[in-house]
Amino acid sequence: MTIDVLLTGFAPFGGELENPSWEAVRRAAPMLRDRGVAVQDVELPVEFGRAGDLLETAVREHRPGLVIATGVAAGRTAITPERVAINIRDARIPDNAGAAPIDEPVITGGPVAYFTDLPIKAMVAALSAEAIPASVSQTAGTYVCNDVFYRLQHLVATGTGAAGAIRGGFVHVPSTDAVDVGMAAAGLARLTEVALGSPSDVRVSGGALH
Image (tube, rainbow, N blue to C red; front, side, top):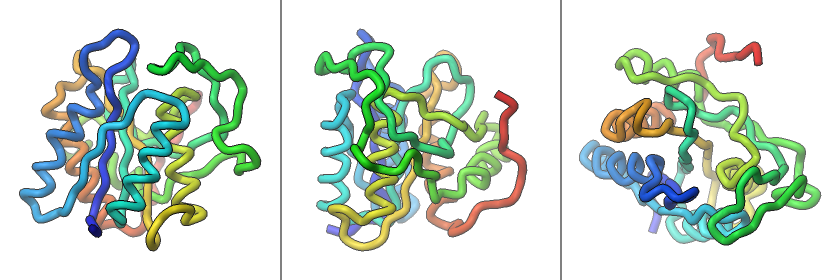
């Protein structure tokens, strides 16, 4: 089955009862379907390796043109499309399977990093225009979010296991005390529409000093 968009979020971890990324995805998906977008939403486990494997399986099964993976970034106060995925696993806490890799590659022999091919600055501009807090992020961390992001971009770059060309990227949502789930879902739906309709990005500043 071919679809327009694959959205993924994560299961709860770290003792939490829910993960805002999955809550945003499962609410954004019907919003997009109501607007005529064919969407498949998938919840991924917070596990190094296995999450990326399941993402790749979903891509092979559904053959989306666009993949947006999401995760939660506690401490951030905005929705943050990620610019770059790096080839490293360095866990501050164990994942849900108890794994805590240190200084290991996501893919042995893979490139040091991949840049997303999504129009992240246009996505941020669209959310800001609707008073939804958003900014470009320069780091997806070194935990399972980055692991999935790197696996996705490797899939985009190499076509490994995919049927046809895909575009992909990663978006972090903040915890619900910073942005409520309803706003995060609306933001995710809007930035997905922008990604679908914008093959190239806008040339505006999205950099950071640190």
